[in-house]
Length: 348
Image (cartoon, rainbow, N blue to C red; front, top):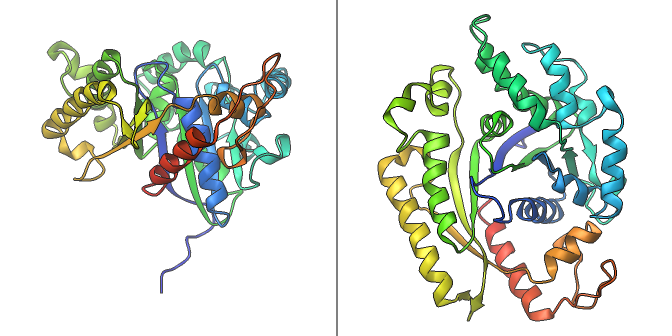
């Protein structure tokens, strides 16, 4: 008989990241987290907002209107703000040990937004991450203690693990990352054990695969940068990097349940680059069978979900009021999108 996971056990920590912006990382993080929580009421889901724009937090806290005001209220607390940046401010003053109140930084999404399941939690985002990046790098570069780089790169993992002790049963974590490979993105990578890469159908997304390989794993890195690259530092400090889990071919125009020929052509280039990457560094991948998932264009769905802070399962085919417009959610695109998201969730 399979044993129940102990209290607060985090079985998977997914980072959703691509070195290219505009590929749908934030919305995908929201949808995956909310749907997973709804489908697994016996588990807990923690969403971690590691983007200075904090758009994921706005959605969770009630949507683009109400959620923005809620986020501003949280950020107004100054040094007492319960956000990722608020926590890092405290760790800047205590770089090498926990501050003892980590669990206070975990927010229940349903407390602010009753559209959400009660087992969905949030570590809130913060614009100050941009300012903190330089200070984080300075502390990492300290000669003593010798564990300085490792200790700092565990700040986010420390926070997630401490927050998990407030929860019961199995926990899934989804981390929304900023495109920039700044210090706070490095902390997100070291807090994750799986990496999901969303792409869109353009040449920049194809190039971004090479950037991910170089920046995160040191594959194809310029020779003169190899001794100081992130992967080498992580290895020297005993830190395990996340395994490549899946590539999401996002926002595609669908025809007969598949991406159209034009989209397939560009996705083919992306797949080829990923496969070349896998040949060179197979150990960085989670499975020998590579997972590519096609997700169709959301049309009005993403607008409605983001505006209302509404999970996908709450959306129905009808008109919604969004500011001074009334976008229509049509039944067929909604059905197709839900179907593809359910298929993706089946491998998480």
